[in-house]
Image (cartoon, rainbow over all chains, first blue to last red; front, side, top):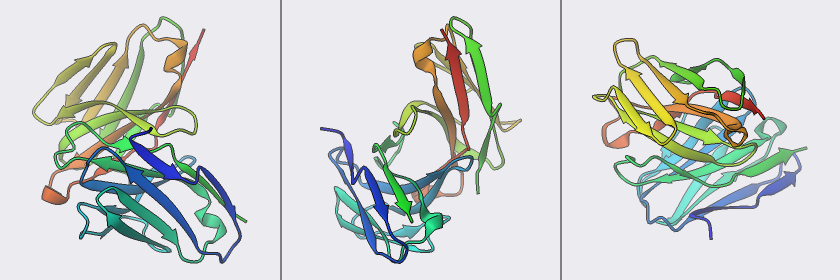
Length: 113
Length: 114
């Protein structure tokens, strides 16, 4: 099994729908992150959490919310999806030092029509 | 906002040649990291260099860091077709303290021709 698992892998949804992307990890890491990737824009941080009781906004949090249900689980919700939220979404984890870098999931490709 | 900017945006080389990719950043950092992404897949951590280090090696990878110029380079020696991927630099900026987190650049697309 992958260290960081994202579900679903692909999703097509309609404008205005609420959708949840899920992330679970077996790394035992405290820190978890949600990034989105758009062509030509690289990765941009949406939300991050340094432990179960900690939630922080990233640079592009508008239109998104998150929930850290447990140390191993961090979900991202789009409350009312819009077409410009079509992107590749990545969950990542790290330990407190982050010395060994982030571990990324395989991504969720979301299309909002 | 992107902290790191990679250069060039795209690089095409012949198998066996060396590939050099550069990253410049704006603010002082704790460390700089390089990641690799195969098409449409998750990023994989390659190497981390701390602000007090100037050079680091890992297999065919060599990373340098010049904090006075706020720049880093990633050298892949004796490239292989399997090195074809996108490469990203990511910086951990000073000032984040316990809340430090990575900021990624836009990436470099490397194509290695067989």
